[in-house]
Length: 411
Image 1 (tube, rainbow, N blue to C red):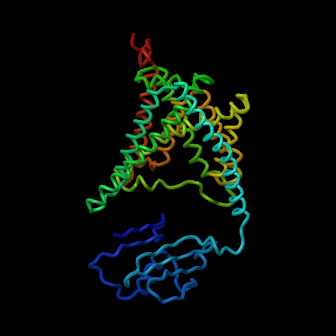
Image 2 (image 1 turned 180 degrees about the horizontal axis):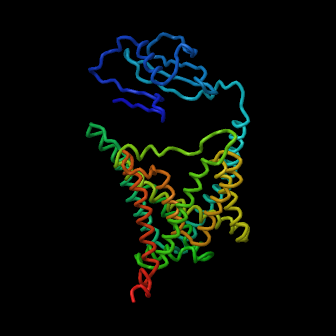
Image 3 (image 1 turned 90 degrees about the horizontal axis):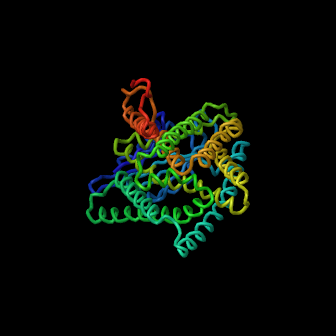
Protein backbone atom coordinates (compact mmCIF):
# COMPACT_ATOMS: atom_id res chain seq x y z
CA UNK A 1 0.00 0.00 0.00
CA UNK A 2 1.42 3.37 -1.04
CA UNK A 3 0.23 6.95 -0.72
CA UNK A 4 1.59 9.75 -2.92
CA UNK A 5 0.71 13.44 -2.44
CA UNK A 6 1.74 16.01 -5.06
CA UNK A 7 1.37 19.77 -5.25
CA UNK A 8 -0.40 21.40 -8.26
CA UNK A 9 2.99 21.60 -10.06
CA UNK A 10 3.51 17.84 -9.74
CA UNK A 11 6.23 18.00 -7.10
CA UNK A 12 6.30 15.35 -4.40
CA UNK A 13 5.02 16.46 -1.00
CA UNK A 14 4.50 13.15 0.74
CA UNK A 15 5.21 9.48 0.01
CA UNK A 16 4.47 6.61 2.32
CA UNK A 17 4.38 2.84 1.87
CA UNK A 18 3.57 -0.11 4.06
CA UNK A 19 5.90 -3.05 3.65
CA UNK A 20 4.42 -6.35 2.51
CA UNK A 21 5.85 -9.65 3.63
CA UNK A 22 7.32 -10.51 0.24
CA UNK A 23 9.05 -7.14 -0.25
CA UNK A 24 12.82 -7.15 -0.28
CA UNK A 25 15.03 -4.37 1.17
CA UNK A 26 16.12 -1.46 -1.02
CA UNK A 27 19.36 -2.14 -2.85
CA UNK A 28 20.59 1.39 -2.29
CA UNK A 29 18.78 3.54 0.28
CA UNK A 30 20.77 6.64 -0.64
CA UNK A 31 19.74 6.27 -4.26
CA UNK A 32 16.09 5.97 -3.20
CA UNK A 33 16.36 9.12 -1.11
CA UNK A 34 18.07 10.97 -3.95
CA UNK A 35 15.24 9.96 -6.28
CA UNK A 36 12.63 11.23 -3.78
CA UNK A 37 14.50 14.53 -3.35
CA UNK A 38 14.56 14.96 -7.12
CA UNK A 39 10.83 14.25 -7.41
CA UNK A 40 10.12 16.91 -4.77
CA UNK A 41 12.21 19.51 -6.59
CA UNK A 42 14.83 19.73 -3.83
CA UNK A 43 18.57 19.36 -3.79
CA UNK A 44 19.44 17.10 -0.89
CA UNK A 45 23.08 18.25 -0.91
CA UNK A 46 21.99 21.80 0.00
CA UNK A 47 19.95 20.68 3.02
CA UNK A 48 21.45 20.11 6.45
CA UNK A 49 20.90 16.68 7.96
CA UNK A 50 20.13 17.10 11.66
CA UNK A 51 19.96 13.43 12.68
CA UNK A 52 23.40 11.91 12.13
CA UNK A 53 22.47 8.55 13.68
CA UNK A 54 22.95 5.67 11.30
CA UNK A 55 20.52 3.35 13.03
CA UNK A 56 17.90 2.29 10.47
CA UNK A 57 14.96 2.70 12.84
CA UNK A 58 15.73 6.36 13.59
CA UNK A 59 13.83 9.02 11.62
CA UNK A 60 15.94 11.35 9.48
CA UNK A 61 15.37 15.12 9.33
CA UNK A 62 16.82 17.64 6.87
CA UNK A 63 16.36 21.40 7.01
CA UNK A 64 17.30 24.11 4.57
CA UNK A 65 16.07 26.94 2.32
CA UNK A 66 13.33 26.63 -0.26
CA UNK A 67 14.69 26.68 -3.83
CA UNK A 68 13.88 29.99 -5.55
CA UNK A 69 11.55 31.09 -2.72
CA UNK A 70 11.59 32.68 0.71
CA UNK A 71 11.36 30.52 3.78
CA UNK A 72 12.72 27.16 4.83
CA UNK A 73 11.80 23.55 4.24
CA UNK A 74 11.84 20.46 6.44
CA UNK A 75 12.14 16.93 5.08
CA UNK A 76 11.36 13.86 7.22
CA UNK A 77 12.23 10.32 6.20
CA UNK A 78 11.86 6.96 7.93
CA UNK A 79 13.59 3.66 7.18
CA UNK A 80 12.23 0.31 8.34
CA UNK A 81 13.52 -3.16 7.50
CA UNK A 82 15.97 -1.78 4.98
CA UNK A 83 13.34 0.17 3.02
CA UNK A 84 12.41 3.84 2.95
CA UNK A 85 8.85 3.91 4.30
CA UNK A 86 8.16 7.65 4.65
CA UNK A 87 9.26 10.83 2.87
CA UNK A 88 7.53 14.05 3.93
CA UNK A 89 8.19 17.62 2.77
CA UNK A 90 6.78 20.45 4.89
CA UNK A 91 7.39 24.07 5.75
CA UNK A 92 9.91 24.50 8.54
CA UNK A 93 8.04 26.51 11.16
CA UNK A 94 10.51 25.94 14.01
CA UNK A 95 13.73 27.41 12.69
CA UNK A 96 12.42 30.61 11.15
CA UNK A 97 15.06 33.24 11.93
CA UNK A 98 12.59 36.05 12.50
CA UNK A 99 8.84 36.47 12.39
CA UNK A 100 7.61 38.68 9.58
CA UNK A 101 4.88 41.27 9.95
CA UNK A 102 2.52 38.93 8.11
CA UNK A 103 3.26 36.11 10.56
CA UNK A 104 2.63 38.40 13.54
CA UNK A 105 -0.57 39.74 11.97
CA UNK A 106 -1.77 36.20 11.21
CA UNK A 107 -1.12 35.14 14.81
CA UNK A 108 -2.95 38.21 16.14
CA UNK A 109 -5.91 37.46 13.88
CA UNK A 110 -6.00 33.88 15.08
CA UNK A 111 -5.90 34.92 18.73
CA UNK A 112 -8.63 37.50 18.14
CA UNK A 113 -10.80 34.89 16.47
CA UNK A 114 -10.31 32.33 19.23
CA UNK A 115 -11.08 34.86 21.95
CA UNK A 116 -14.08 36.19 20.05
CA UNK A 117 -15.42 32.66 19.69
CA UNK A 118 -14.77 31.67 23.29
CA UNK A 119 -17.47 33.82 24.88
CA UNK A 120 -20.34 32.91 22.52
CA UNK A 121 -19.34 29.23 22.54
CA UNK A 122 -19.41 29.11 26.34
CA UNK A 123 -22.71 31.01 26.40
CA UNK A 124 -24.15 28.73 23.72
CA UNK A 125 -23.18 25.54 25.56
CA UNK A 126 -24.56 26.82 28.85
CA UNK A 127 -27.69 28.07 27.13
CA UNK A 128 -28.29 24.77 25.31
CA UNK A 129 -27.96 22.74 28.47
CA UNK A 130 -30.27 25.02 30.44
CA UNK A 131 -32.88 25.22 27.69
CA UNK A 132 -32.92 21.47 27.04
CA UNK A 133 -33.48 20.65 30.71
CA UNK A 134 -36.20 23.27 31.10
CA UNK A 135 -38.01 22.44 27.85
CA UNK A 136 -38.02 18.73 28.60
CA UNK A 137 -39.28 19.37 32.14
CA UNK A 138 -42.08 21.64 30.90
CA UNK A 139 -42.79 19.38 27.89
CA UNK A 140 -42.13 22.16 25.42
CA UNK A 141 -40.78 21.93 21.93
CA UNK A 142 -41.52 20.16 18.66
CA UNK A 143 -40.57 16.58 19.52
CA UNK A 144 -41.64 15.27 16.11
CA UNK A 145 -39.56 17.88 14.32
CA UNK A 146 -36.53 17.12 16.48
CA UNK A 147 -36.94 13.41 15.76
CA UNK A 148 -37.14 14.02 12.01
CA UNK A 149 -34.00 16.16 12.12
CA UNK A 150 -32.20 13.42 14.02
CA UNK A 151 -33.28 10.78 11.49
CA UNK A 152 -32.24 13.05 8.62
CA UNK A 153 -28.85 13.64 10.20
CA UNK A 154 -28.25 9.97 10.95
CA UNK A 155 -29.24 8.90 7.44
CA UNK A 156 -27.18 11.46 5.52
CA UNK A 157 -24.16 11.05 7.80
CA UNK A 158 -24.39 7.26 7.47
CA UNK A 159 -24.43 7.48 3.66
CA UNK A 160 -21.55 9.95 3.61
CA UNK A 161 -19.38 7.80 5.86
CA UNK A 162 -20.09 4.64 3.92
CA UNK A 163 -19.24 6.39 0.65
CA UNK A 164 -15.97 7.70 2.06
CA UNK A 165 -14.67 4.68 3.96
CA UNK A 166 -12.13 2.26 2.46
CA UNK A 167 -12.74 -1.20 3.83
CA UNK A 168 -9.73 -3.37 4.72
CA UNK A 169 -9.41 -6.90 3.30
CA UNK A 170 -9.82 -8.53 6.73
CA UNK A 171 -13.44 -9.36 7.58
CA UNK A 172 -12.91 -8.70 11.30
CA UNK A 173 -11.36 -5.28 10.60
CA UNK A 174 -14.16 -4.45 8.16
CA UNK A 175 -16.81 -5.27 10.77
CA UNK A 176 -15.02 -3.15 13.39
CA UNK A 177 -14.70 -0.26 10.95
CA UNK A 178 -18.37 -0.55 10.02
CA UNK A 179 -19.40 -0.41 13.69
CA UNK A 180 -17.15 2.56 14.44
CA UNK A 181 -18.46 4.52 11.47
CA UNK A 182 -22.03 3.82 12.61
CA UNK A 183 -21.39 5.54 15.95
CA UNK A 184 -20.70 8.94 14.38
CA UNK A 185 -24.14 9.37 12.73
CA UNK A 186 -25.83 8.47 16.01
CA UNK A 187 -23.75 11.05 17.87
CA UNK A 188 -24.47 13.87 15.42
CA UNK A 189 -28.14 12.93 15.26
CA UNK A 190 -28.31 13.29 19.05
CA UNK A 191 -26.53 16.67 18.86
CA UNK A 192 -29.06 17.92 16.31
CA UNK A 193 -31.93 16.69 18.49
CA UNK A 194 -30.54 18.62 21.47
CA UNK A 195 -30.06 21.78 19.40
CA UNK A 196 -33.61 21.71 18.12
CA UNK A 197 -35.19 20.93 21.49
CA UNK A 198 -33.25 23.83 23.00
CA UNK A 199 -33.80 26.33 20.22
CA UNK A 200 -37.27 25.73 18.76
CA UNK A 201 -39.48 26.79 21.73
CA UNK A 202 -37.44 29.91 22.48
CA UNK A 203 -37.18 30.89 18.84
CA UNK A 204 -40.89 30.31 18.28
CA UNK A 205 -41.66 32.58 21.23
CA UNK A 206 -39.15 35.30 20.30
CA UNK A 207 -38.99 35.34 16.48
CA UNK A 208 -41.64 32.90 15.23
CA UNK A 209 -41.49 34.11 11.62
CA UNK A 210 -38.03 32.54 11.26
CA UNK A 211 -39.51 29.03 11.62
CA UNK A 212 -42.64 29.23 9.44
CA UNK A 213 -41.26 27.74 6.21
CA UNK A 214 -39.07 25.28 8.14
CA UNK A 215 -42.04 23.98 10.14
CA UNK A 216 -44.11 23.60 6.99
CA UNK A 217 -41.33 21.60 5.33
CA UNK A 218 -40.97 19.33 8.37
CA UNK A 219 -44.71 18.70 8.31
CA UNK A 220 -44.44 17.41 4.74
CA UNK A 221 -45.77 20.48 2.88
CA UNK A 222 -43.12 20.39 0.17
CA UNK A 223 -45.40 22.24 -2.27
CA UNK A 224 -45.98 25.20 0.03
CA UNK A 225 -45.19 28.50 -1.77
CA UNK A 226 -43.37 29.89 1.26
CA UNK A 227 -41.12 26.83 1.31
CA UNK A 228 -40.34 27.33 -2.36
CA UNK A 229 -39.61 31.02 -1.85
CA UNK A 230 -37.14 30.40 0.95
CA UNK A 231 -35.42 27.59 -0.98
CA UNK A 232 -35.05 29.84 -4.03
CA UNK A 233 -33.72 32.76 -2.01
CA UNK A 234 -31.44 30.43 -0.07
CA UNK A 235 -29.91 29.14 -3.32
CA UNK A 236 -29.43 32.72 -4.52
CA UNK A 237 -27.79 33.76 -1.25
CA UNK A 238 -25.55 30.68 -1.26
CA UNK A 239 -24.31 31.40 -4.78
CA UNK A 240 -23.70 35.03 -3.87
CA UNK A 241 -21.77 34.06 -0.71
CA UNK A 242 -19.65 31.60 -2.69
CA UNK A 243 -19.00 34.27 -5.33
CA UNK A 244 -17.80 36.67 -2.64
CA UNK A 245 -15.51 33.99 -1.19
CA UNK A 246 -14.02 33.09 -4.59
CA UNK A 247 -13.83 36.75 -5.57
CA UNK A 248 -11.70 37.48 -2.52
CA UNK A 249 -8.83 35.67 -4.27
CA UNK A 250 -8.69 38.47 -6.85
CA UNK A 251 -8.58 41.30 -4.31
CA UNK A 252 -5.02 42.68 -4.08
CA UNK A 253 -3.14 41.48 -1.01
CA UNK A 254 0.23 43.01 -0.01
CA UNK A 255 1.38 39.61 1.28
CA UNK A 256 0.53 37.92 -1.99
CA UNK A 257 -1.27 34.97 -0.36
CA UNK A 258 -4.13 32.95 -1.80
CA UNK A 259 -7.04 32.27 0.60
CA UNK A 260 -8.77 29.61 -1.49
CA UNK A 261 -8.47 25.87 -0.93
CA UNK A 262 -8.50 23.57 -3.92
CA UNK A 263 -11.49 21.14 -3.96
CA UNK A 264 -9.29 18.09 -4.44
CA UNK A 265 -11.48 15.52 -2.66
CA UNK A 266 -14.19 15.57 -5.32
CA UNK A 267 -11.61 14.96 -8.06
CA UNK A 268 -10.82 11.44 -6.84
CA UNK A 269 -13.91 9.67 -8.19
CA UNK A 270 -17.64 9.93 -8.67
CA UNK A 271 -18.10 8.30 -5.28
CA UNK A 272 -16.09 11.05 -3.61
CA UNK A 273 -18.12 13.77 -5.35
CA UNK A 274 -21.40 12.22 -4.19
CA UNK A 275 -19.82 11.93 -0.75
CA UNK A 276 -19.30 15.71 -0.71
CA UNK A 277 -22.98 16.25 -1.50
CA UNK A 278 -24.22 14.01 1.31
CA UNK A 279 -21.62 15.17 3.81
CA UNK A 280 -22.66 18.82 3.48
CA UNK A 281 -26.38 18.23 4.12
CA UNK A 282 -26.62 17.77 7.88
CA UNK A 283 -23.80 20.18 8.88
CA UNK A 284 -25.67 22.87 6.92
CA UNK A 285 -28.69 22.40 9.19
CA UNK A 286 -26.55 22.37 12.34
CA UNK A 287 -24.68 25.51 11.31
CA UNK A 288 -27.95 27.27 10.51
CA UNK A 289 -29.26 26.31 13.96
CA UNK A 290 -26.05 27.66 15.48
CA UNK A 291 -26.41 30.97 13.67
CA UNK A 292 -29.92 31.28 15.08
CA UNK A 293 -28.89 30.17 18.56
CA UNK A 294 -26.12 32.76 18.96
CA UNK A 295 -28.29 35.88 18.39
CA UNK A 296 -31.00 34.32 20.55
CA UNK A 297 -28.50 34.05 23.42
CA UNK A 298 -27.31 37.60 22.70
CA UNK A 299 -30.92 38.80 22.79
CA UNK A 300 -31.61 37.07 26.11
CA UNK A 301 -28.54 38.71 27.61
CA UNK A 302 -28.93 42.23 26.17
CA UNK A 303 -32.72 42.38 25.67
CA UNK A 304 -32.08 44.28 22.44
CA UNK A 305 -32.69 42.85 18.98
CA UNK A 306 -30.55 45.46 17.14
CA UNK A 307 -27.68 44.74 19.51
CA UNK A 308 -28.10 40.99 19.00
CA UNK A 309 -28.00 41.51 15.22
CA UNK A 310 -24.87 43.63 15.51
CA UNK A 311 -23.11 41.14 17.79
CA UNK A 312 -23.81 38.30 15.35
CA UNK A 313 -22.49 40.39 12.46
CA UNK A 314 -19.40 41.36 14.48
CA UNK A 315 -18.66 37.74 15.38
CA UNK A 316 -19.05 36.60 11.76
CA UNK A 317 -16.88 39.49 10.57
CA UNK A 318 -14.04 38.50 12.94
CA UNK A 319 -14.21 34.91 11.72
CA UNK A 320 -14.27 36.06 8.07
CA UNK A 321 -11.25 38.31 8.60
CA UNK A 322 -9.28 35.34 9.90
CA UNK A 323 -10.30 33.22 6.89
CA UNK A 324 -9.56 35.87 4.27
CA UNK A 325 -6.14 37.38 3.70
CA UNK A 326 -5.41 41.02 3.07
CA UNK A 327 -6.64 44.36 4.47
CA UNK A 328 -8.95 44.98 1.50
CA UNK A 329 -10.76 41.70 2.06
CA UNK A 330 -11.09 42.54 5.76
CA UNK A 331 -12.56 45.97 4.96
CA UNK A 332 -14.75 45.09 1.95
CA UNK A 333 -15.40 41.39 1.38
CA UNK A 334 -15.66 40.22 5.00
CA UNK A 335 -18.36 42.79 5.97
CA UNK A 336 -20.39 41.86 2.89
CA UNK A 337 -20.16 38.14 3.60
CA UNK A 338 -21.12 38.64 7.24
CA UNK A 339 -23.92 41.03 6.35
CA UNK A 340 -25.36 38.55 3.84
CA UNK A 341 -25.51 35.82 6.49
CA UNK A 342 -27.14 38.14 9.02
CA UNK A 343 -29.72 39.31 6.45
CA UNK A 344 -30.70 35.76 5.52
CA UNK A 345 -30.85 34.64 9.17
CA UNK A 346 -33.06 37.48 10.39
CA UNK A 347 -35.15 38.13 7.28
CA UNK A 348 -35.77 34.62 5.93
CA UNK A 349 -35.13 32.20 8.77
CA UNK A 350 -33.88 28.68 9.31
CA UNK A 351 -34.78 27.01 6.00
CA UNK A 352 -33.23 29.67 3.76
CA UNK A 353 -30.13 29.79 5.97
CA UNK A 354 -29.63 26.01 5.77
CA UNK A 355 -30.05 26.06 1.98
CA UNK A 356 -27.60 28.96 1.70
CA UNK A 357 -24.95 27.09 3.68
CA UNK A 358 -25.48 23.88 1.69
CA UNK A 359 -25.27 25.52 -1.73
CA UNK A 360 -22.17 27.53 -0.83
CA UNK A 361 -20.45 24.38 0.43
CA UNK A 362 -21.35 22.42 -2.69
CA UNK A 363 -20.12 25.15 -5.02
CA UNK A 364 -16.87 25.58 -3.08
CA UNK A 365 -16.24 21.84 -2.65
CA UNK A 366 -16.76 20.79 -6.27
CA UNK A 367 -14.56 22.18 -9.08
CA UNK A 368 -16.28 24.60 -11.46
CA UNK A 369 -15.40 24.93 -15.13
CA UNK A 370 -17.07 25.93 -18.39
CA UNK A 371 -15.09 23.26 -20.27
CA UNK A 372 -17.35 20.27 -19.75
CA UNK A 373 -15.10 18.05 -21.85
CA UNK A 374 -12.20 18.09 -19.37
CA UNK A 375 -11.71 15.08 -17.10
CA UNK A 376 -13.23 16.80 -14.05
CA UNK A 377 -16.11 18.38 -15.96
CA UNK A 378 -18.59 15.86 -14.56
CA UNK A 379 -17.99 17.22 -11.04
CA UNK A 380 -18.77 20.73 -12.25
CA UNK A 381 -21.96 19.50 -13.90
CA UNK A 382 -22.93 17.84 -10.62
CA UNK A 383 -22.44 21.05 -8.61
CA UNK A 384 -24.34 23.19 -11.11
CA UNK A 385 -27.06 20.54 -11.37
CA UNK A 386 -27.68 20.51 -7.62
CA UNK A 387 -27.88 24.31 -7.42
CA UNK A 388 -30.03 24.57 -10.55
CA UNK A 389 -32.33 21.76 -9.45
CA UNK A 390 -33.03 23.37 -6.08
CA UNK A 391 -33.52 26.77 -7.74
CA UNK A 392 -36.02 25.38 -10.26
CA UNK A 393 -37.87 23.56 -7.48
CA UNK A 394 -38.02 26.71 -5.37
CA UNK A 395 -39.20 28.86 -8.29
CA UNK A 396 -41.94 26.48 -9.42
CA UNK A 397 -43.23 25.81 -5.91
CA UNK A 398 -43.14 29.50 -4.94
CA UNK A 399 -45.67 30.27 -7.70
CA UNK A 400 -48.36 28.27 -5.91
CA UNK A 401 -51.47 28.09 -8.08
CA UNK A 402 -50.23 30.76 -10.49
CA UNK A 403 -49.37 29.66 -14.04
CA UNK A 404 -45.70 29.24 -14.85
CA UNK A 405 -45.57 31.74 -17.74
CA UNK A 406 -48.35 34.11 -16.75
CA UNK A 407 -52.01 34.30 -17.59
CA UNK A 408 -51.54 36.51 -20.64
CA UNK A 409 -49.33 33.99 -22.40
CA UNK A 410 -51.77 31.14 -21.80
CA UNK A 411 -54.68 33.18 -23.11
